[in-house]
Image (cartoon, rainbow, N blue to C red; front, top):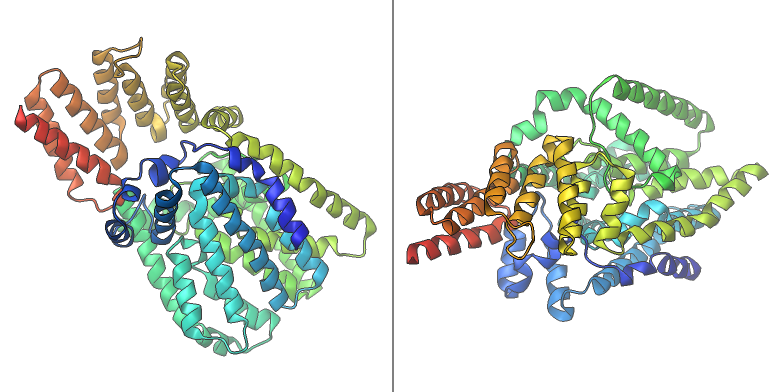
Length: 517
């Protein structure tokens, strides 16, 4: 175990030198105004508000303590996250030991979980603490459930703590029941009865998670959950996502922070059929082997992968970080394969294990700076509007306005509605920067107005209304400025997501400024 922990620290050591990146880090850390208020105010905001379309009170409170003790230091944040990952590694090993998994098998699983290349994103991205903490509580719940004198109250409490970090563990009760039925040969009815409180908590947590998503996106609760188009395409989307995840596990060269969104079409339907065929073949093989561990690890994958397979609404289709906990199940199946008597298979598996840390260390270099991250992402996914937008922003922050404009215009040229508004907004910001050689207030206003026309997210709409109101005030058009601000304030009054608090403050400040003049 000491060797695995040592290799893990070396593998992800670049994080101590990494900077914050423009991938939620400003929202959760640098620009999070709740980290700069007294603890009582922050506590109330984190527990009684949704945040960025989710409910994350415990991770946000941990950021409050960290930043108020150490300041805003990405190296410290990474060190804390890495420490949580090391704890999770130990918990995985102890959990497998409690289940009676053979020594060689659990060592392989633990090693793969510790250093596999898909762990680069969850470990190198400082804003991913919610997943790391959730995993810690989920694994602790699993361990508590295996004790002879287990406490239902303690198990339920720790399970709730996991949900207060992230929704990843919502389906955990099904795994605990699977352990009772598959590995311990317990009665099915009594197993479900034993964990009935967790099923009730999980149902309530699912409802809260969907509510948070609806609040964060401004969409209707029913439309994000039961929309006809969503339900129609959901099975195909799930099967295609599983196929992509399998590719990511075996191909470290394909890893990217952004993947294309799901599109229903002939290729996706063929991909779904292929995935069904593979799953059917595996199910037949597993049935013939009658190995309960194969069934258990398969259930493990499903329990922790299903919540991120669009069953619960998500902003993103596929991400490396969604494999953080399901990787234990994939590693279990791999370990059972490697431990077979076939010498060639064992040698091949051993070789893969040896090179994993090197691939992870190499891939971690893309997370060192904002420029590294988005240059790499544009190279891997040149048709991503968001990637071009964020690369342009990295150039803008580095005072290379010419390259920034090139990237923003490249994003606009892609004409993808998903990021078009953001591209116009960033163009407007450059033209609205007084010390830029490209400063042009009329071009800035035109860019903001174009962005407002295509904006469909609340974030974009609010930002454009405020920016245009500020420009109108600068151009001495107070009536237009007041009209935009009034509309913005009316819309802001109906949202409860904590991330909008800053723009609420800015709106009130500008209104007061206009009133005084």
